[in-house]
Length: 333
Image 1 (cartoon, helix red, strand yellow):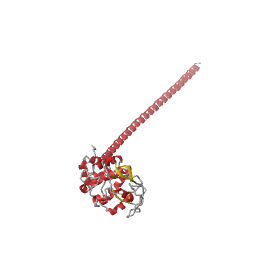
Image 2 (tube, one colour; image 1 turned 30 degrees about the vertical axis):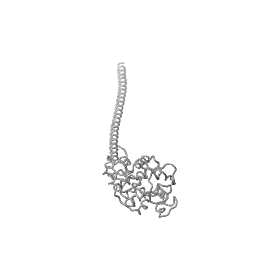
Image 3 (cartoon, helix red, strand yellow; image 1 turned 90 degrees about the horizontal axis):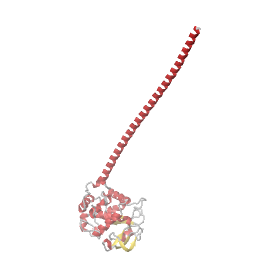
Image 4 (tube, helix red, strand yellow; image 1 turned 60 degrees about the vertical axis):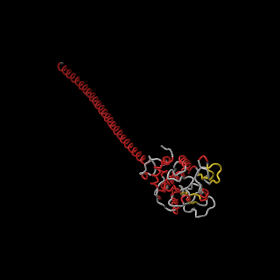
């Protein structure tokens, strides 16, 4: 009996110990699991923190990169603006000697000294030059007096024409009789254009102006010969080009009287004044300044200016910097 009690006691003890062991093991497993969970959570949080830190670092790097890029862009923009403002127009360093803050006769003389003299290709060289200086995108001659399209080198006038469309020849904006066909005015590309021979003959030696009333002749593109509009300040016959080319011819006159200002005292023509300044008659100054404003520089003029520059090695400053006309003859402050 005693032995049975001892055996029962041992079983109970073992049983209790087993339970205790199981409970302890379970508890430890739970704690270990919790600890592992906490550790995992801690690792996850650390990972998130690291990721956030990396993100901040990345954002900081990106921000720094953007800032650097913006700074570089700003620097480039500033440099570009600086480069642009140093020239402000086509021609760039060609005008490095010109002080554009000058006005009137002073600026006109400075430009005259720059653009004259130039390389003279001779009267016979004009037709060949027109193959590059005065062609439309389709390769045809760009005639400002008519709508006829001529083939360069084929439709040149060699003495015979009777109607518009027969051929083209060399039109002096300032008639050659004004300077007795003397060089280099006689072959200066900047004032001699290829035009329909018939219309060129109709224009004759009349100045470019604006007509009033019915014209005595109208060309195929709308150029007109007629009596001058008295409101322009001139009375007499004038040849009026279409609006698309009024600015072109105004800037041509500006060029001529600037390039040849030392010769102007010997020239007589309704648009001109026989002096070194202003070199344009009052009515011509006002009308051509108006034309220049109403018909701004076109891509045609810009390309022609570059092409003539490659041949004559001088430029028309009133194409490169249209404000120059106002600074010389106008009231631009």
